[in-house]
Image (cartoon, rainbow over all chains, first blue to last red; front, side):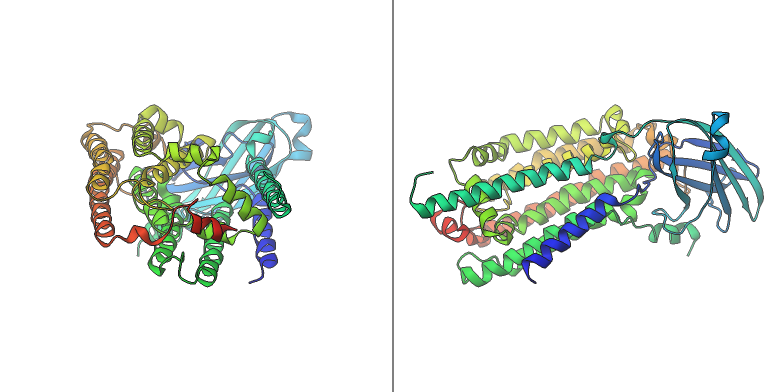
Length: 181
Length: 289
């Protein structure tokens, strides 16, 4: 395969990687863990604690007091700012599903938290055993550059490659001219 | 099939950064390997079994990080332990047996290859630094210390979940594993340890794994807070999970070290390590240019 096509492909893949939304890996301590009616609910946020910007909320729904996960449940996630004046304009309501989740035991929803500050999160479940809901508050921080270190690392690697490439090319030219390096 | 098992088998993480990294590593290796075969006319080419080792190493990294083993590693200690064992004792030596540095070098455009080739000439500071950190004593000490430190409960708990510390844990585990395997299965050139010395070199980490594995297996209570706080999704208690992970480290690790000793003995016996020249040797310098 021509080198240009390969390099373009690599660059494209790299850009896609950088633009990829956050993806939860369920290993964190749950943000909320409560029994709600017939269910035990474990709620995770990624990032944890959440930050302004893209946030994934994952919910593990289990029969209360067991390790049996509940299938065919409808899970609704809500987020409303604690500040009353922002509630109407910034309230979020979305359905968490198993489509696209990494761990297929979890229901997940991804949304954009518009601002830092105190947020009230809610998870409502309706399923074969009945209904249950939990609510909890989280403090969302501002997003910083360090939250997404990948572009910085990728930039540093590209810079090093460019310098080595440039030095290699100039070294060859010097060698071709017969001047000592 | 139970819903829990079905969910486990379908839980794959398609983490783009890992997929891109694995794809780039394989793509560059393939290009370089073919160029070496064509231009070197067999003089510096790598045998096919080394290429297969490299592919197997990349697959192992993929399985460790992207498969249900990686996805459920945050919920179960024994799966997280399996992930680390795969990275340190399977992926790292397989990748190095593939001798990837020369093919990677050859996959680069001429100017970049020349630049990297200069960094690897014997008197260059970068090469001297590499020579120092890949000395058997240093590589062994760093790897032993890394494995021991990350199993201290305070540090282990700090690293759990998708945090920067967790990434640092994986990078240091895998990075020091690559350093550790370098003297006996270097990614380029000849091993600095061979035969009996190479086999003896594997004894300290094997003993460390047995000791830590036994401590974890026989601990009367859970050692790590993380696994007491995450939800239980299978009928496996925190202590049973911990005992399983200790066995993975203790027995699984020992078996893999034993297998590595056999491979090293066979390599030594067959003198396979003479099939590629040292970087900086006249023939390699010619090829790099």
